[in-house]
Length: 138
Figure 1 (tube, rainbow, N blue to C red):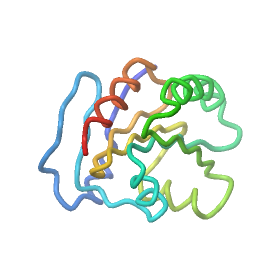
Figure 2 (spheres, rainbow, N blue to C red):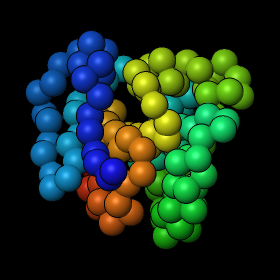
Figure 3 (cartoon, rainbow, N blue to C red):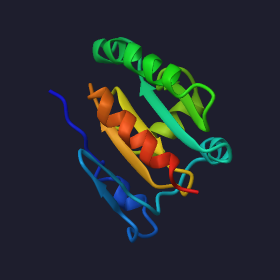
């Protein structure tokens, strides 16, 4: 099943939800606190996090879609980062910070810190639109 959702648990991490922007198929929510590693990446612009774990068949199906999106945004201010829950403590802290309950999860973080979260398999055009919208924010 294809769907897009904002994790309800992220509301617990919010310092304010004013400034929510609704778009067709996704929503950016502001006020989320981010781990240091993501704050460092945000200095360059929009960040697309691809969060996976070992032995995840859906993760393997989504990898080519992420790779295609990455090639489409090559040379722009969009940073793609892949973190595997099973790899290291940085990955585990990201999963905790974004309240990730299942994989794969793709999180788009705007430069202002607002996020949109795509859980499981997704429609590439919707994610591409969300990335393009995220790039508009200074």
